[in-house]
Each structure stands twice: as C-alpha cells, then as structure tokens.
Length: 511
Image (cartoon, rainbow, N blue to C red; front, side, top):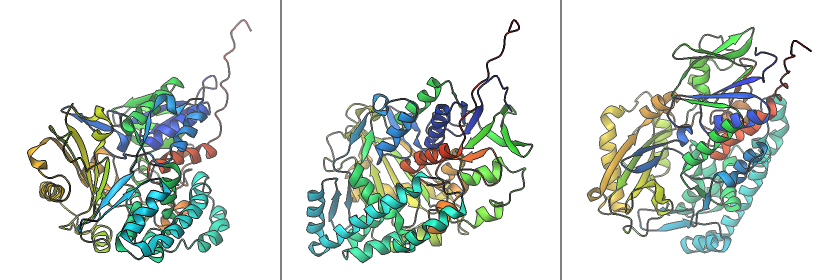
C-alpha cells in the first residue's frame, strides 16, 4: 500500500479512450494516476500513424454522443469544447448499393422521410415506428443500464421484465424487418452493430438505439481526428498531476494479500498502487496479466467459449492530386456488396474469407485539411472479416495482398474510378495487426461480441470478480464497444471506485 502521507495511487493499464477516461475520472477523485501503454501515442485504437504527410487515424472516426465527453471533462473541472473542436457532419454518411441506388443519412427529419419515401413509399410509416422503438431502447438501454454498474445479479433480475417487453431476444435485423419491407432499408436500419463488433442477425435489438443516438445527437468529426481527443485527454491527466508513460508494456498485475497491489512491466520494473484499472482487453487481462492467479469465473476455458467480435481488414492510403476528384464522395460512405445475410454468416459463423465484401470508406480530407498534403487525400477503408479463432483461420501473411487488390478493384469500380493511378502512401492492418499491436484476443476488432448473454451483467464486470482492487474499462466490459461505450465504462467505474483518501500531511519535528 502507499505511504499515508502521499495521495493514493492508481495505475491504468492501456491508454485507449476507456483507459484515458478512467484516469481522468480517478484524477478527479483524488488519486495520483499513472497510465501505461505500449504504443507511441495515446488513444489505443484511436491513435494515429503519420506517413508521407498523411495522418491515418487508425480506429474510430466519429463521435455520436458529444455530451458523454463534455460530462467527462466537466467531472474534471474542464471544458471539452476549449480543448477539442467537433464539426457536425451533414450528411452523416451515404450508403451505395450495387444497383446504383443510394440512401443518405442525415439528422433532419424531413430530409430523412424524403429519403425513405424515395426508396420505398410504403415503408415511411414503419420507418417512423422504428425510430420510436429506437428511442424507447435508448432511454432504457443507454441512459439507464448503460450508465450504471451491472455487476450485481439483482440489477439484472430487476430489468428482466423490461427486457422482455422490449423484445430484447429479437435481433437488430429481425426488428428492422418487422418495420420495413425494402431490403435496402432493412440494411440501412440494421448494419450499425458492425461498428461495435456485433452480428446484426444475432445481436439483441436493444442496439437499434444507435439510430436514436444519431438522430438526437448527430454525427461529429473531431478536428485532428480521434487522436486529438486522446491527446487532449492525456493533457488533462498531466494537468491533474498524473503521468502517461508511453512505449512501455505491462506484463503482469501483481496480487498481494488477496488484492491488486500494482503491476510489473515487461522490462521488470515494479509499480505499486492502491488500485489497478485494466483498459487492456478483458480477455488479455485475465488470461495474460492474471496468468499466475487461479480464476473462478473468467477462466481460460470460459473465455475461449465466448463469441468474439469479427476481425477487421483496414487499408489506409493516400492519393496525389485528387482533392478535386470524386466530388460525389463525401466524408463517410458505405459501399454495400451483393450479399448481406450470407456474407455476415461467412464472417461470424463460418469463419470464411469471402470473395465479396462491403466497405466503409472514410475520407477525412474533405473536412480536415491537416490529414493530407495540400491537394491530396487521405483514405481509410474497412472491411469486416473473420477473427483468428475459427478452425479454418485465414493466413493473412498469404491473403492480405490479394484481399487488398480485391478492395482496390471494388473501389475503382464502385466509388473511386482511376484510384490506382493516384495512390501514394499505403498501410494495411489485418486481424494479425490487432492481435499484435492492441493485444486483442483472436485479433478481434471489438473484444467480446455484444450478444444478449454477453452484455450487461454477463460481460466481464467493471469491478473484477477475480481480484479486489482491480477494475476494468474499455470495450470488453460494460457497457461495451464504440466511443460512447468505452467512455461510458469510465463513468460506471467511477461509481464503483471509492474517492481517494485525503493525503495526510507529514508533521515537522518541531510540531
């Protein structure tokens, strides 16, 4: 334990957004905080790599609930909007299908009704019902369950009737299909779970709340990318008197007298603490960082039985002299492949790398000139793929380049004609990269998949069931993945961690 004359110490493992938010909350509670991360920049999946004048923001690209960040800053006596500039997106994104039809998502209700009517006039009424359903689930799932601890069985029992009433057993896709008939609208209303690692055909319909999040709060881009948010978070921690140590990796969580007592780094250095918060993936936390301790609930076998989120293939590239090209391609575009249900089955169930793909295309240079040299563009194109845990696992040392070439062909054919003549910088992340860079089990992009029996109480708890004094933050714990989710894990954690005991002043000898 720490010296009674000093503030209580907290160590946060991982400088992802959940870890940084947790460190800020702990600093506001009076702890002396040290954050440790193996990367060179804070942010975890929200960090960046700069190459040839292009800044590639590696992970999340949008902010959907700015109030969560504003609340976090306010808890630290700070003003988020003084530290970070958010720019509202209008439109949010455009969806493009193979037949040439499109759907543009916006915040304006009249514009959205016109879009639905243009695609399928008979579905307007069902679309409005879907939005009402989404709002109901937002108030219950996000503002209620998502903002409080769910580590007690009684908390789950109390909400079971409401779960049943809202048909949480029904999937996101099944719920969309009950409201609209047009297959394109069914896709547009159901694909969102993919952004938090879930199979739309199996994830609980509670996650249709995302549609209300977008409608109520809008979609925003942080100038400077999510990396700018992470850097601002790290600065708040330093201003609180905390430390952010980059380029160092935790090898083990130390347990003494039955409590978390600190960590040992890969290089052998020991750091003592009164509490430890792990923002490392919950699977890595339990199987690696607590490998020398017998675990009762989150055993290796139990974690192996979990359904993990899909992997991600991400191609980051720059283009020369394209600022005035592709004028119809905005900040966010979703290019839909020929199959939906079958493709999702290939990814999540069969573990098969399909020949076809659907793509999320991020072109931040249309909003933020700092991401590319003058006159050029920076892109990030993401394709969901199987994680590494399937029996017929993909060998990415063999498949990465052929898959990138397929992605290039699809982009040239469907969205960016002439792309190959303008390519400059190029960088590829596969599930192997997620495993090695982010220490993600099975190279999964979003930790444990948010199915109904892997959510809330059934997820690894924010207060560890295995070791007193250990807490968890980030995508693998409650409430889950996505920027609002991981920021929310710190809000929940702050309700579980006691305020730091005030430091006791040392008495002078003359006293």
